[in-house]
Image (cartoon, rainbow over all chains, first blue to last red):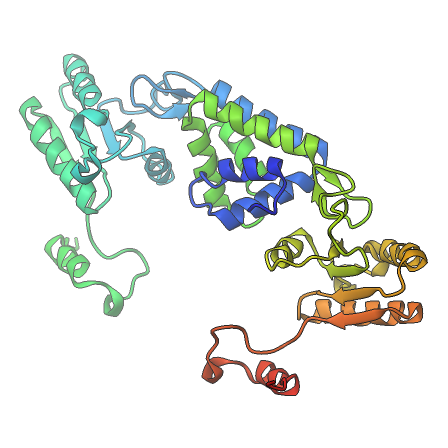
Length: 203
Length: 203
């Protein structure tokens, strides 16, 4: 690192904070940038500034978008009484790819006591307020708890289930089972057990 | 991708051109940037602009530095008549870490006919001119051909050896052998053969 010119060292320090980027990749990216034509660098810098300027957090579902309320919340064809609760923006994008026609609620995290993240750190109060408002307009409301099937995801889902039960709404979870294209021989026993438990009638 | 806001899509396109960064990592980095405080983003943008403004290519050895001639070429304690020829900036940094006290010459590439890279695309003419100038001042000049031990690296070294021989200077190559901490059982036979050929007397 010390053999590097100061301006590269400075940028490397910042780039190595990017998710998934280590020290070595950061050096490679910084040098690569140093060798790009000025025009391309201007484009990159403008895109970063533009992103920061234009992106807003939706006050309803906490999605990231250039509109606030976001494109999804302001889409009249979406079912406002069907809310898919996800951990973060990436999970929203994944569900969105399935053609889901409801709306979302991003928690921006999961309950994780070892990291000091409790319900108050997540957008749970906001979810409750949203449900209270929806109750005045809709008779039937469904909340899909689509947190990841990890310890933290399951703990958060259990917490949400307990918290939302008094509102007498439909609370569902994603089905568990063998993924498309899987091989039973290589499927872990817990997944296979859940797939058997959740077996469906052929009609 | 289409589910993403336009300003994220724009930045993702640029970030996915970074070396070693795929589409998925680029999305992660763009979102991460979108969620950073404005202050941090300003720091990053400033560091990129600063890098581009300050970095120069050394007219002697083609190193990247904030000084031109670079810190190495303008260091009076360095042996100017000992030149280590390397492919790129990263290789210079690696040799520099060994405590090497000579100077460098960055070729900025290797001869690679399949990619249309010939000697003219590299800083070879500049190396010859440099040696011609040095010959007027120094009696003994040594050029270490430190290109990587790959097909392109070896081809470039052979080309340089032929081109530099008429100048009656010392031309050397890095020693080949088993790397420090290696296990003979797992060393490939070519490396082991070279290690035996290059065996040294114990004194």
